Length: 73
Image (cartoon, rainbow, N blue to C red; front, side, top):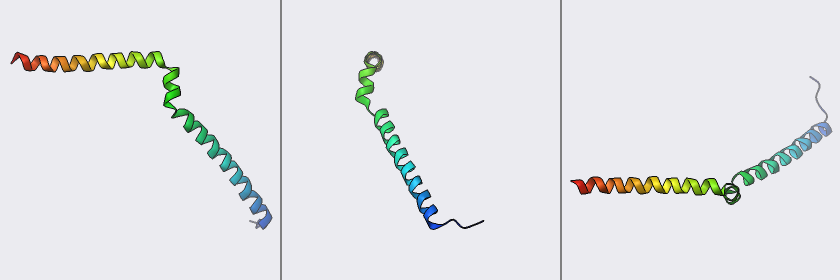
C-alpha cells in the first residue's frame, strides 16, 4: 500500500472536520427542536387538555375510592 503524502492526509482531515462540524450543528438543531416542549404543547393543546382531564378524573376517582374503602370499615 503506497503511503499518502502529508498534504493529502491534511486535506482529508480537514474535510472530515468540516463534515463533522456540519453533522454536529445539524444534530444540535434537531435535538433543540425535539426537546422544545412549549412548542409541542402549543401544537397539541387540545390533546394535552384532554389528557390532563382524563388523568385528573382517574386520580380523583382513585382517591375517592380509597377513602370510600376506609369509611366502610
